[in-house]
Length: 351
Image 1 (cartoon, rainbow, N blue to C red):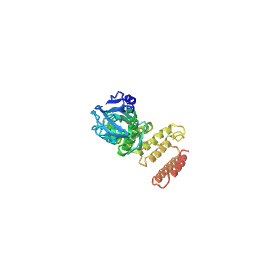
Image 2: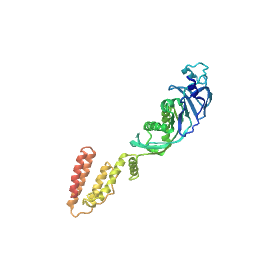
Image 3: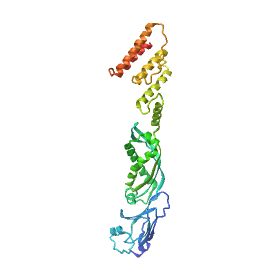
Image 4: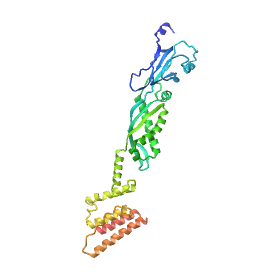
């Protein structure tokens, strides 16, 4: 090395990181043509860790404190460089500082719904939002798995990666928990507790410690929420049990009967009159209730008719409808046969 090039070189006497920029988690000391003077001072603050990297390999890690850099304080690097015990020349090494401060109040959410199994609804898609706090717990793992040899690594960059880990972990832990959605929605702390343990394990693989995790809200997509609201409404009408899908289906069909009656061509608009309309309503209600009359409306007396044969004909058709329903309940005829025969009988009855 010529004298001129030697003079141009600059030697580092103090290595430290002031953390001037907000949200920076990892920072590489700007070496360029600089060399570290033998006996230089390394200052590592309470919220930091310093890592010496030689040709891509982590050599020595320093926690908070002040160190004089010699072969005694750089044992691994000394071994890698094959230095004598009392080396006097400056040396080169990449030095990275990592912030170990807790990153508090970081918002998380599920922009895409997570599909999970549910013991009440079979399969549902849920969205959740909340807050979490984390920190770099293992600088070696963080450097190896995430930050690498970049000059700067920010909080926003690491959170982009954590978001994918969070979504995958939530889907796995919630799907295996067998906790019903209604229980999650009623107790977000229960959901947070279920996810936090699995999430902490997933984060630890990358050298990140999960400090706090909470769930602020959990909800269904709009179309599923509308279906849930309708099911709750079913449970509030006619003494239906809200945890029975059969009751929900019956409520939907029964709710359509008065709507049909309001339309021309519906049950009340085909010229049947009050007595025939009540008869058809009873038959349909008995069909929906499986013969138990759960939706059977109060009996409505048919208006008196002037001719006895007509009344006898109505009674005969009504009896045939009841027998037809009995055959369907016993599985002796198919639903298609039942529907076509019932339609013919009702046509004769209504005229």
